Each structure stands twice: as structure tokens, then as C-alpha cells.
Length: 387
Image 1 (spheres, rainbow, N blue to C red):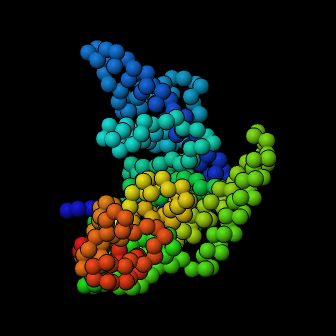
Image 2 (image 1 turned 180 degrees about the vertical axis):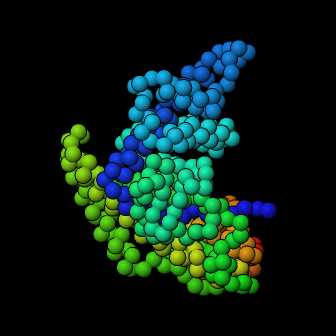
Image 3 (image 1 turned 30 degrees about the horizontal axis):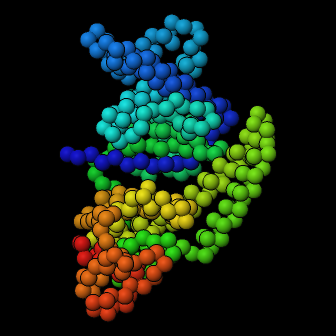
């Protein structure tokens, strides 16, 4: 029987004492991660020089060594102030990062910095009672008597809590609670009705998304105004930040204001993407989109900023995971090399060489059948034909 996993991210309202504990836990996790990475590098150098006598580094061996070290040394007694999972999960994270490196899915792990790295730590549910959620209260190890206040209730109260990750964005604390479920939640099944419609979607800068049935997804003027205001505020704060001395409390205050602005921009964009992706998955049974390679597209410096702000990759990911949750929804990602803009949706004629469509051309004119159509609509119709 396949088990389902769901994550619910909730904002926290910690007390002053709880916030200090969170900062300590994040600092200890960062300290143990850097210690483990340093030891890994030393052992790996020895292993390369003499493979017969030396063993390859292992994150579990490093964890056991660190546990003995902290129990024997008084200098490391501060680590016992937080729960054991706060530092032990740092070794698991290091092991996973090296796995991704060996599978050619990521880069070599770097040392974590207090200023640059994101503050977060993870608590695992060793028993049923180690992590609990009751209404608007979160109980974690070391905070069983004084629970942490939640902004909302847990969406999956009947599930088994596996872990919770506490992180900070700007000066706001969040928790991501991972829950194991036996069945798909009823609200998900009710929400999605079966349809037989299919659709092709072409993503663009001028019009965010053009559907093959002629409909368009546009960014509203209100949202554009809000983003413009926040962009201006970001520019002002960046200028103020550049004038502040590097070691000062005022600089840190400006930095928190700046990170708040970035967080607001991210929230506005993600809200738009969630709503539109949810609408598409609810309405259509088969969806075809182009699997865009943004790295190659970003080479065009004139479009780089607008491509980065559009968050196309995030939109595709949202449609992907939401389509998997809905029954009988097929998502086809067309290859990035598929010439959806160069093909005629009427006769299938392809433009080659000098006749190729350029970015400034907004209409597709077919030389073979004489079809005149909007370029984005033409591309979306071609994508629909792949279903």
C-alpha cells in the first residue's frame, strides 16, 4: 500500500525565549554541519592518497564521533541546550548533499555562513508524542510544557507527524510539518471533478500564458502596481544599505526591512501562480506545456530580468505536482527544442532559415496556406496537438 505525504507550512508566533532557542538551534546546526564538512574533506584527502588502508568518509561515522566529542569536551556543552535532532540532522543533510553530488544532481557542498545561509533546523518525530499539534499550538522537544503558537490549524489532523522544519524568512518564523497519510484527503477528492477537456499552454512575457482555446492568463494591473511600489522600495533600501557601515545595528535593521520586501514580492507572485495553476488543474483533464530551459533563455540580457521575475519554472512545477494529486490528469512537458512557434497550426508547415519567427514578430503568417494567427495562440494549438 502506497503511503501519501503532505507538507503544511504555517507561520509561527514564538515568544522571546522561544525565538532565542530557535536562533541557538540554527547556530548549532550550522556549527555541526561546518565541522562535519571539514572532517569529511580531511578524510577524503587521506582516502585518495591511500585507498587500501583508509576508509571512505561516511556521515554516520562522523555523527558518532561528534556525539562522543561533545560529551567529553566541556567547550561543546552548549550543544546540549537544544534537542539532539537539531544537530544530528546536519549530518543527514551533509550525506544527502554528497549523494546528489555523486549522482550529478548538485554541486560540492559549501560551508554555511551566519550572514548568507538560511536559518533552519529540523525536529524528527521519534515517538508519537515528541511532536504534537493541538489546535493552534505546536509541541516540540524541549518545548512540551510551553507550546509554540501557530497562525492556523494543521490541515491534516488525522495524519502521523514525521518531522517539522523550523525556518526563518526575514524576521518571520515558519514551520513545515511533514505528515504521513493512509488515504488521499477527502477535501482534495471533492475539489477535483473529472473533465474530458484538453489544453495547450504557451508561456510568454507580454501575456503570461496563452491557452489553445483562445483564452489568456494576464497579470492584473493592481498586482503590477503593488510589485512596482515594492520594487521602488527595494531600490531605496538598497541605496540606504550601501551607505551604512558594515558592522552596525542600523545596517541589520535595513537588511531585515529589505528581506521583508523581497518576501512580500515572493508572496504576491506565488499567490498568483497557485491560483492560476489550481484553476487549470481543476478545469482540464490533459495539459501540455513546453519544458523551458531558462538557463539558455537567460543568455539574452534584454529578456533576462523579465524572465527571472516571471517564475515560469515555478509555475510548471506547481501544475506538475497539482496534476499528480488529481485523478486522471495528464501533464505532458514538450521538449524545449520542439518548434511550437515555427510550425503552422493549420497545415503543419515549418518556417526555416530567413523565414524563422523573431521575437518582434507578434503574428504568425503561413506562406503555404495563408493562415494569419497570433504567435502565442499558434504555439499553444501546436502544443495541444501533442496530447
